[in-house]
Image (tube, rainbow, N blue to C red; front, top):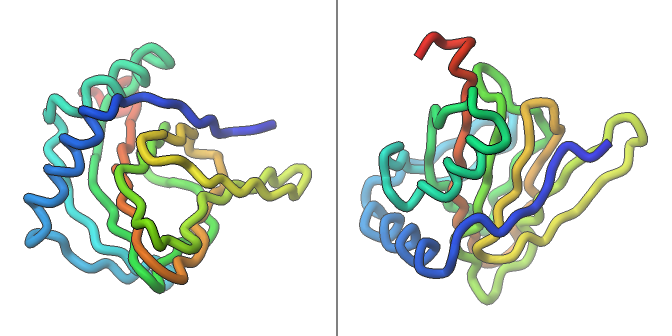
Length: 165
């Protein structure tokens, strides 16, 4: 059973607004290296009350009103970046990853999902402005970036009833 779906949650104006937020914050990114996940990425948190996140939050609330935005950040994947297969852990119950920008010369950087029952991999070339939505049980990865870069907005949603918010 597929545990992910691709949706168009934001319009072009919102995407460009988020791209501008990412550019303004460029000097505040920090490099992350996690050998367990193979992550080599530049990341920066975004304020959870940013109005540009409203459409994504509304979509998730319609799916499950018990979810709230726990963490939100931009990940900038450049040449040599990738993420090993994993499932989101901790308090994360739903993840929304929105592709904000891809360089014209991007090679690699595909979203990968594995149906563990059938061992069938799914390779997604998500378009700019599209979002992948999945729950904490989806086994996923990001393929190696050979050239170019990819900017994604990652939103992790937690369950209110589990956290007494």
